[in-house]
Image 1 (cartoon, rainbow, N blue to C red):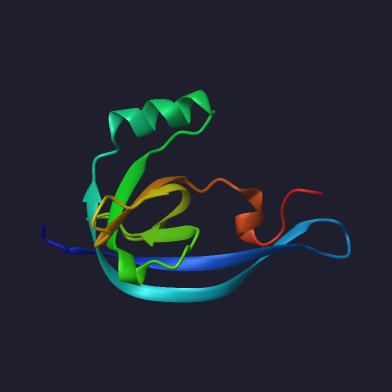
Image 2 (image 1 turned 90 degrees about the horizontal axis):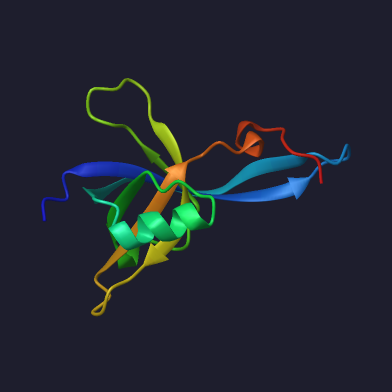
Length: 118
């Protein structure tokens, strides 16, 4: 594998504010981790669709670099800004050297600071 692309992995915490809206705060961040962009497996794609989730991209990261982060920031080649993805499922094949992150575009209103009411 090439390990030629990079991502930022972000762990966030969602807490309700005084008005009952969800506030998202960044707990930790790992910048410029080398990854491989891989194809979403057919079984993952259809299982996600049945659950109402659209898995749009998959990343392969080294297992030692991944600590359960839920947000992936990835700048597609040729684009000026990064796309924010939410991890919907992870998979570590036998041997455990790499972990696959199946992601969807993050459309959560809470991701922009103030979001859904609880």
